[in-house]
Image 1 (cartoon, rainbow, N blue to C red):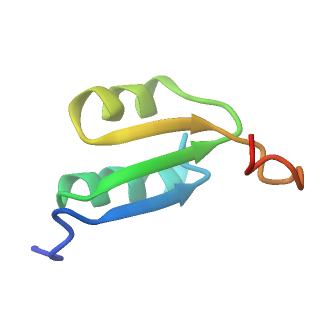
Image 2 (image 1 turned 60 degrees about the vertical axis):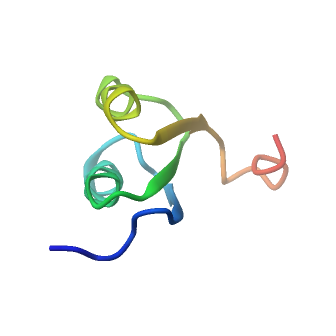
Length: 69
């Protein structure tokens, strides 16, 4: 399926496991550049970062200042 995401930048929160990781993988496979935020990283997310245009960012979105850091 071609979602025309090549050249697009998307942000995924909760990207280190489960549904967030699956969404990150799917978007990256469709050609999007993905900024993948998670409280804790994971080996699986790092593998995606090595294979696709995925930037893994450790962020605590429950903290009001978390997104600025």
